[in-house]
Image 1 (spheres, one colour):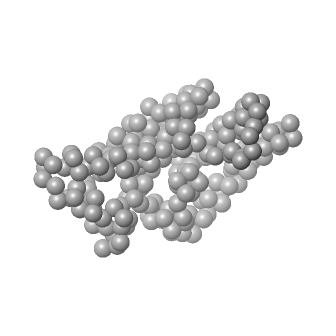
Image 2: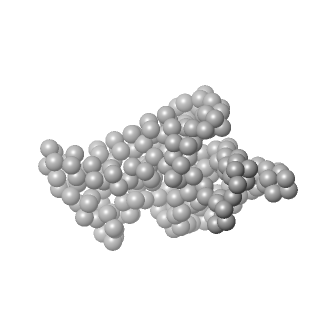
Image 3: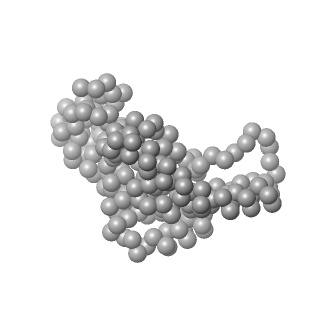
Length: 204
């Protein structure tokens, strides 16, 4: 069994009687709800789909936690389920994808402000500078949403959740080489999307 910071909490969930699992699982839910929602939101692109994917993620955790054997870190398993639930949901509702981009442009992303991409600087800024920064931040998020689901997931885990290559490989059950390859392709796609935006922003 691998050393895992969640070991004791997971064991309490696994050992709890049926009527007591809700209490143990509630603690687990409180610990992971923000991370799960954030991953689901970044991949699906809107709050309604993110909530559905997050609910599906915790439903799977609740049903299968008794069989978890710590062959990977529990957090890696959670990320894997959240990513798969989000990608599967997007496949089922692909017709809503364009509408989700419009919703984000209208400010829906404000629902998860604490996990926005941080482009801030230490110096104080006036309203015009702040508005320009917010516009740039939104363009970065839109560019991420235009990536393929697999590249989007790996970009979210790397740059939003700040996972290492090794952690991403474990979470997605792929090789480190595949992680690097997908990230490289994501970088190229983001460069194409964002270079004109960055030129406009910094040369304005």
